[in-house]
Length: 485
Image 1: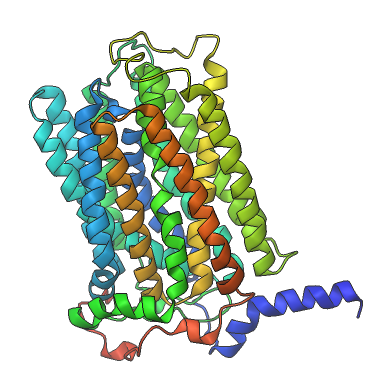
Image 2: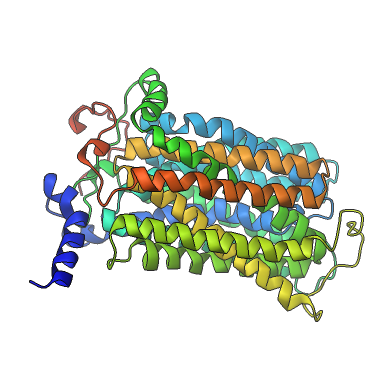
């Protein structure tokens, strides 16, 4: 055998070693092979996020929630992320008690309320407090939906498929923001005003209500068999006390996860500057809608590129892919923020008040500005996909990954809550932008030693176990039980 053939065999071997150490099961046949296929379930989870968090992102991306005054929207989003941050710390434990389907269902319920609050504000301008309260409620719900999503998305694929599956999920999820942005753009195409009408919000409300129904079509995780024949580790349903303790057990067993906390903290931090202080400050409503549309569309391509063509590139070992991905993201971080700085230094809050004449899509200097939105979309999706992939490289256990996903949303939302509140307090645009640049840089610096020490060519067998698991037969009957059909 030639040297290159030996290297290829070694690479293939590392991807399947964990499967060889585990018991192999026969996958379902017939129509059940489609419904019970991991990619089908990951795509269904993507559709849930398409209709709820995706629409939330479309609304946020309009700048000021589609309103003229950004203060109420900024306070609502800050409250949303504050309650999400607190709830997400415990959401992994809640998920491991209630199960994925119930968490996803409960998680979707807060989004229609949030959208409805903006309709109420359009009808009754004094209803700003309702928007803030609904933001708090939707934050608690978001913690459940994102923890369940993260656990399933990282647990269902084999080690060689994780980048691709994350890319598929991220593409479907961001289609929600694309569709929402398209609705906003179509309904406001002839508007030269700075706010959207009720028609846009009603369209968003219908989409979020569809999302409430979708979790009932999910399959129980402990019945899932991966494409290599390995069974997904059963999601445990122990006591609340055991699960709360598991938060600290996860940190003790895998303390390297702490090095990802800065990356988690920065992962949505730049949304405030981009959506409110750039898109909301410089453009009229129809152009904001178009910017929002191209931003979320770019995310689809960015996640698929980094997930499929870099993180799952079969030519290289997993460690090499991790370092390659890190290098690409670092280059994009500095390129995009250097470009953004060239715009930010030309305007301030006082020079761009809400009543100022805004940039329109037909203006000659618009194309250069919209390309920045596109590249920010690419960066966003590459950042999020990389963060999920790194967590997925650390374990295949859904319970452990649920705790990791809870940490992720906790720190991500903490950063978001802080920066949205700073924006509501009308801190200078430049201060918010510089803090954004510093934090994303710090996130990548801290992630490097974790990649060097913790990411291996395959997941070790000890990383498959979190704490002692009960037999599936001993799980409570309420725990997502369904007939074998």
